[in-house]
Image (cartoon, rainbow, N blue to C red; front, top):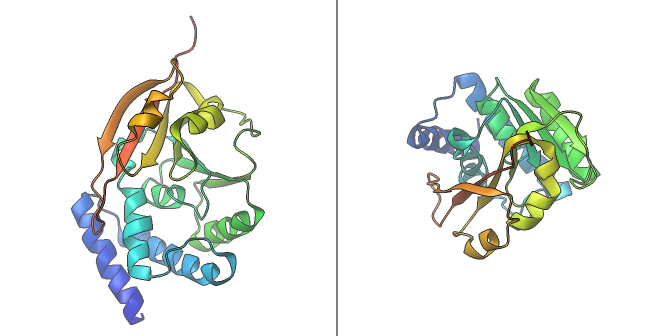
Length: 216
């Protein structure tokens, strides 16, 4: 193991301990292999602006895992997943869930296929499509986004993907007052959670929205 990966291993263990999210050794190794795969593909595909492996642990892996306690399963779709964030870390942490990674980029889709193969993620499915155009056969319990768009655009693009009364979860930095004010009237704001991400400074919030229940 290189010095960089040894440091990443230590930071990951430290971060998981702070999150109170125990993962077995096989799951932790999966996350580190995912990190290494992102670094390797990043040289050609520009998956993420963050290049330093230590910062990737905090800004990508731990940031994604910090929202796990607030999500509902067992089916989840990651809308505009990009390099697989937060979907892949969630799938590693919750192997009893089925996680669908949705992105319109074929280049990122190629990376995601390789990641799913190399990490043996049997609970992950891939879809290459624009969110607005994709119509899943069944609704998901939760649709999550990390950097997809503003809240109203996210709701417009993803609300048809969740079951009646399903959850729409959006990861944000600062408290999004203005974005919340622009939400459709039939979408209920269930909570805005101030999330603490280990080893990462700056505000992080998770906006939990509830889709309307089915009409009686």
